[in-house]
Length: 508
Image (cartoon, rainbow, N blue to C red; front, side):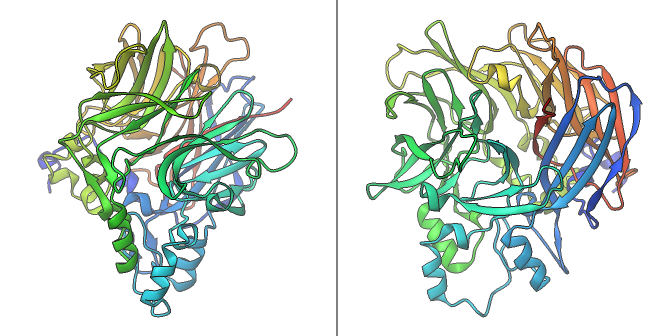
């Protein structure tokens, strides 16, 4: 297709289709432009899709790509870069067989002659062992340990210096979680909370799990369920990627995209992908459920129009009101947009931009309003945005003003943009450079910060098909989105675009 015939001429989908062919175990030294803030010291860890290929086979969905970990180490104005594949059980099994032998979210594996139908039935009772453990979504700290996450029950501890995969933890073993969100909340005191599904007294429940912080010992050994709620549909619990936490409540957004448990069982028996068990019920509203942090019980729920979301920006209480900000879509087509064939054919798909047409919206209601009060979403900005971040350590679960994100509008003039939104004034600021594609911007506060946005944003950036073997760490002034510095690296093989990460400040 000629360039003039492209539906989205400024968007290069190849950044999502790359496969890393050679790890960078020995740190590369970055070429610095601008001036790195002298106070900026620490490690930016990133996670995301790393390779779509296993032997001669290819995964069908972006979520199935082998997890690739990235490390940018910042010290005294210098920056180094490494990347390593997560050595999950799935990764090792696939590469030992030189083909895809574990079924993923959107990819069916080749038949395994060693597994009978009886093995598949038995696997229903061991989801931590039968499901893929390819943890390619995010990374989070549990005390002084770092773990790679996906939505299955298994997480992997990684070495934040070498990126070695150190150990594997199955949440079925400590709190019987069948699954959990990819985005737990890390509290200022070090406690970690997450939401998942578990069987409580013989019935499936959405549960909130607390992992109490400890300087010595295992946070997982002390984990306990601190909140529960009954799914709106017993056999079709809502799909959840994130949740909110405020001063008094755990905030659960129960959307019309659900997981058919009957479908999951059928998929397990027929070796079919998990994606085929998802159901979108457009005729049903979205519920916002409040679970009391003190009592652990559902205390109220509100409702709004049918919408799909992956990421909650922030949730908080203020003056007797509840506020929930999220990146909302009219339906779940964005998941279809991440199939590899859809990405490859996007330039001839006139509907593709609408599939990705997410917008930041605010849901606000008086906490004293009657149960099932209907909320009208309010648009925070007329910009597509995803992977939102805030000044997390200070303002998670509290009133805030600014959030940062990347563009999700593939039909915009500069689809690779970083966005800052002022939720009070509605003002937006963007940063973009032609042919450049940034990842989730992570806010790092300045040591003498007086305002919410005093600090810098860190983003890993890649380039279009003109520069596939290059990656950089971008440093922006969080107030103005002006570029402060950049560390560029030439990689030995293509550099894929990553998803989520965490910044570990250097300890004094």
